[in-house]
Image (cartoon, rainbow, N blue to C red; front, side):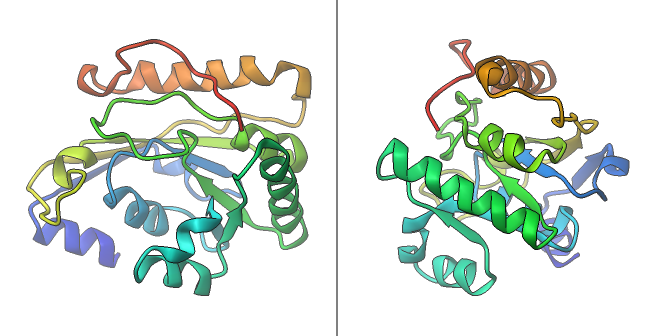
Length: 205
């Protein structure tokens, strides 16, 4: 609620669509183009949801320390083997503690607001937890808080939940197909200004 209030005070009205899909145990995935995205997912995902980020986040001033204190998960992306092992550990924690997860499948923030290719981490976790995936599509956050700026600008923001995608029948051999399918959903629902200039949905880890 505090995030919504702050956004309204800063001239950024938030429109939320599909909120009936928000109150479920799931892997929530979100496109990432602004620091505002982090505050939105903290506000708009259920209690018992943890984030996952690269282990180096601890060195980010203030935010890194808060992230660790909140018991969010960190992964080692120094090499593919370490990344996969970290994802297995994260999946075990999610299952053992009955948690939901929020993850940015692009793996980094888009400088332009345009959708980037998706990495495989969220599918690795889906295969191991069999939790449904709930896509959250953010529109306009890159205009409200631009990269390398400390100024929040007035801009309308939309958060759209898509229906849960069941994963309990997924197979590891079809990983690239799942990524392409979900990436295509984002391309379909994002405005033209946030669609990728070069089509494509897969990357490593």
